[in-house]
Length: 257
Image (cartoon, rainbow, N blue to C red):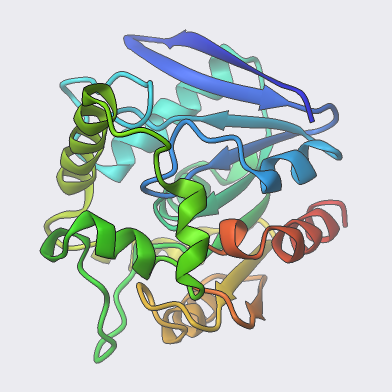
């Protein structure tokens, strides 16, 4: 599927935006470590929808503004992006960090969300369930840990390790730390506010997720009204990358309902 890559000015933030397909607008929010990527699941979604896949501020080729401190700041940024594109309502697909942002967006602006697909979203904590710490492990181990089949990590590894790639990787890790270091990968206020989501919601989880184990999926379903859960076997944390076909089929059926 053909897509184009643009840089749009969203207030004071230069934002890299990939887009492709036609139909109803679909905002696709990437997980950590996969910015600036148009993946097979984007192609599948773009066969039915107008996919908008921005790099979060501070990731990929998007500028990191000085004011970026929290997930709520990203929510305001995406409100501004939709206003810039003159889109009043949108469905959202978000994975991990992107799922956290998508859920926070639906909490704060329910009137702007048609439907919500969350793939192993970060953002809440389950007592007694260990979570993998990105910042305590070498990046090579982190990338492999994202998948059930470690060979699948090759699709998100850089093809070259030049200075530009290394600098961008460090920049993204520092942005991720700024957004999710303390507390680590969750926001207690989000946990309390998930009941405010009124959009139909599909939650998809990998049965072999070693970053946010499947008890997190049950916690999300218990807190989000109108949510349904699908568990994909032989799948780790980055569901749309490890099980692209199965994930896209579930998302398309749900979003088109």
